[in-house]
Image 1 (cartoon, one colour):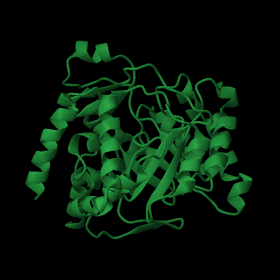
Image 2 (spheres, rainbow, N blue to C red):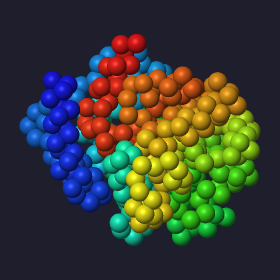
Image 3 (cartoon, one colour):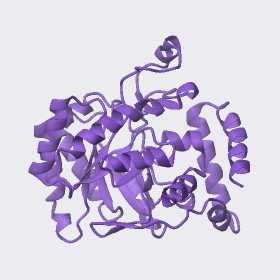
Length: 349
């Protein structure tokens, strides 16, 4: 069953990889959505991709069935939560979403590096806006699925006014998501990463954690950090974490580095700018995760992201201090049974 399923996806992946990456993504997700809507479609998906039992992890009133979630960017507008939940994810982060809808950067903006099991993207926070996402989530959400809201600022918003955008997204989504992740680490919005500096970062975190909405129902606030941070910047993040009582850190986003790739330099250069994800960022993501874990309180939740393809990759992130992990590029390359394989192998330990 496992080998046949793997071979089937290997064949399907060849067909999908013949398509332009962004088109292949939408085609795949729409196909899953169509299957889900068929009579017994949900049952078919759950029967085929059902995950095994795992010791649940409870954190701040949220019950994660197992450690494996889906990173932000895969389902920006929350259109595919039901079929994705059927594939076994215990939590899904929607977004990155901005207050106003925006088309993102010009196409092409997503590229595959099959030799490296990697992707380069410069999507640029393309999304339908926070209000649209909130309305969609209000219509219904999968049971037992934890949903995180990854929030950012619009490209046209100057950094001096960025706080306004984060608050707007927070207010729009507060009733519909289980936690928030502040995205100031994407390399694809000009100037965004400068918001990782101590002063603007503390301002954003403090305003969201102490927002009046939090007095009735508290939504944990996490921060997604870049893998390209210096030791001094990691120290600053740790200090911000302590000063603001930040609830958690997602480590890490994509990298701007192009070191150590098997894909030819000319081919990589032809793809242009963007964030690199997948197997090549495994090491640097692990390094940042390990460093930040040693500098923050044990009460602060760490979510490990970057280069996860197998249960061994997950175990390594957990050993470094993460309590949960998120996948993205590995899911593209490994296919819909990835979650099932990882969780089953984790539970064998």
